Length: 324
Image (tube, rainbow, N blue to C red; front, side, top):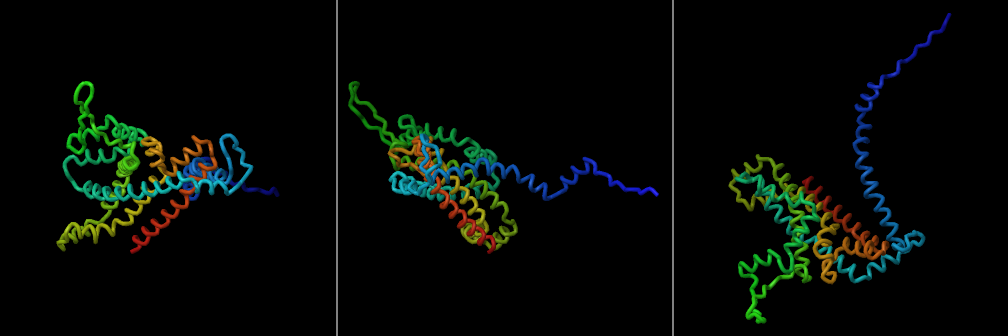
């Protein structure tokens, strides 16, 4: 007798492809792979290098990681410019986000209503977010020019800035008074905050608009039937329902603002006399322009615990509000 063996047919290539495409575990890993690679290559590796540099004495002239020390952090903390940059970071972030949150609520409530030209208003409001921040900030740099500022011209037109008569060789001349927006410490900080609010306002407005449109119309109808006024409706109905979304918008705003360097770099370069330096711009100055990579990295590391603490607190508040 001859033994017969049964040969199992091999699945076709098409069946293999369908198998992998129907495999949820494979698809989930494949979809997450680009994001994981992005985080590892553009965030993870620089973050690890920053930690290594912060615990060393690396400079541009001596880039070897052969001497790990904690003295770098002591040197950084004792620097008065670092202390000023850290204080400016909190002032810059808190004031700009408080202003942004108020205007974002006003704009979001206005833009969910129907009125003529609504699409144009939305386009104008969203334009700062679509414009590259460097280009937009350069535009503001021209607007805050110490001689040809259109803001100063507008103030002079309405009488807020006066023209002073000066006696010259040709008689009495008119010397136009200017604000010197980027030359005075207080005005420079005010200018930086204004530009940051202008930049972040569209994103926060869109997030709050999404939260407002998600509120059920039945709730608003019930409030209207009860005859509740606008202020009471917003305080007792809209605000509690919108608070989790508001926390998310505020969290994104704080992270973007606390780590931002572009606005300060383009407008003031940290001046005048380091009055508008923030941690990111000071780290760039020390690490890249000054060549002291270790102190620059140590300056950046100080932002990590602050941002982690803020993120955990705000997400916890949003979670508790959502559960209630």
